[in-house]
Image 1 (cartoon, rainbow, N blue to C red):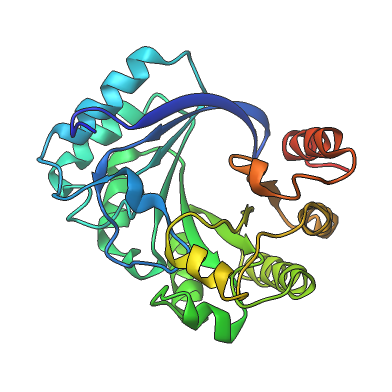
Image 2: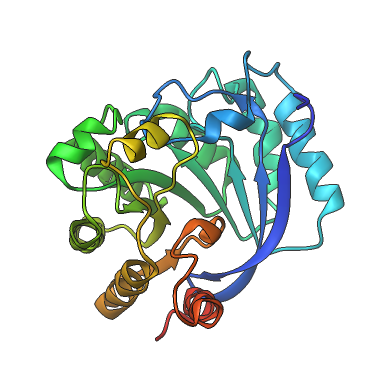
Length: 281
């Protein structure tokens, strides 16, 4: 990987606040996230050192030159946008200038890092900003065991601060994190959706928990983790949409590891993709 090139980029449709939009998503090459969450495998696409000032705007500019037009922009950096060791604050001006032509910019950040730098970037951007926060689960024991280094109070404070500055909020939720059965995973996914929307989150992304980072594979060998079933994913998505409290997405990026022998699997996944776009059953 090169510090002046993103490790991936694409344009895909997504249900926005006011209808389906094309979203340019750029996966920035950057340093590893310092939080070391148990289930995370994004460290596979990171550098050992922080990028130099100017390299991230170069990555974004290069990717945008390769991509077709889009209405929204996602900047994901395998970590936290408002970690000063990941995104140099000196680059905020240049990044905001590149993002300003888009109707909305979405970035990701740990709830505990939402603060002054976030509000400064929003001011420079002078356009709608949405911050995606990893809530993961509201199960009190499992959340602590994920090494997220966050409490529900931390999440609530971050959401309140963002909403107080007219910044949109998206939450990442795990479907069947480790230490839960498939049925328990579904129950707690529903409770997590309830909690996120009750706090004022505008969109929830349901993430099928996966192995592949070493730690999760070891838990699987111990019988403490298995991927969620396709049934659970369908029910979690249907429940989220039934709430009519905000947008709900099911992440289909790595769906091949889920219920490979399920009946009518291709048709069911295609249905979930349509639900992502239409936000209806």
